[in-house]
Image 1 (cartoon, rainbow, N blue to C red):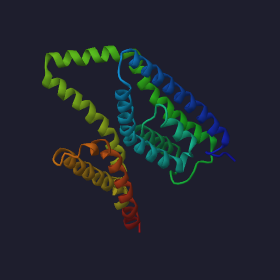
Image 2: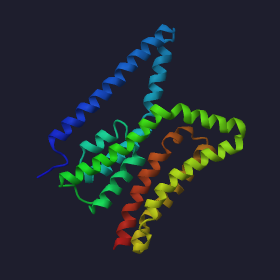
Image 3: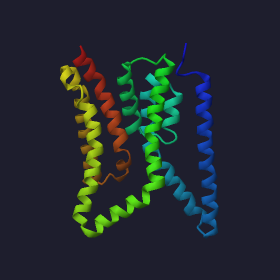
Length: 240
């Protein structure tokens, strides 16, 4: 029987991740040597590396949450690979959920069908390639167009950028509100979203008004963790 945690899958994911880690180490060494050639002090470079390491903890927490969430359904190798290379939590989970819904598969149990697993993996992978292709071939034209809009009318340029962001958010809101017609249980994602939003507002208040600057980089993962914790008693209460 097909297993989402088969050793072969771990091996394939491990090869790709080791390759990416090798690239990271290679360019880190090159950057360090170049910085020394520019006569940057070792003390300054160590300070930069420590700062970069500390600030990488916040997004890493969100990534770990995504891996844990997806691993319940897709096993560990695929989420580990996707979220370690070019994947993002805001894309991977909706993509996997949409593909599973079309296939009529429940997200509560691990997959045992290889074809369904392959289909979901292709959906998650091919979708993310669009961004790479667009950036590689059309980034300069897009950037030039945005700069042209901003140079002609700064106010309209700001509205245009905000509209793009609102459009992206609207796509996720569609998923959240898609099951509200199923009764009170269909409102659980909505309640969790509201609670998460309130947490973000609270953290934003602490950052802006109380000047807790370090919290700015941890607001999102803390909000996610809080919302996930809130969803457990909420689901038990409403589900019961």
